Length: 130
Image (cartoon, rainbow, N blue to C red; front, side):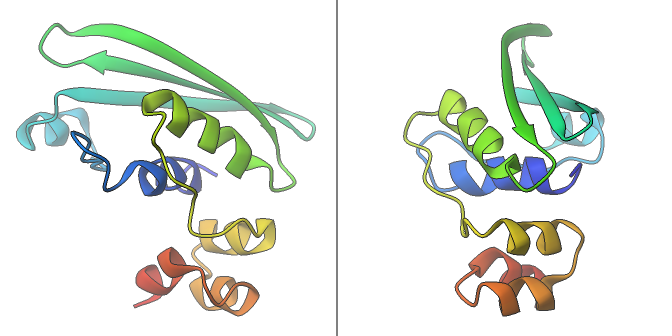
């Protein structure tokens, strides 16, 4: 979940004008890369229900400028929640590489071979597997 959620959002906003998603291991890495906005996020869960909260920070002002929340379930509905987040970041966000919940679950665990077996058109899983 912690790896798949931001990767889904990044996948949906990659290639849009004025947006270059960068996964940074630390805030300092983002500063060194010249980031202008940082997305800080976390999720909480209770049973099958998941709640995602993402806060967007303006790097120049060191100020949170937006809060985005989305809800999903642990049974694979993470895609809907992360797509909602991506559309809030930019309404032109495109669909993720797959809509197959089982493939997303396998990919999120790093099981790329299984993910592409479940959805042979899952380009992101193919790239990660390579």
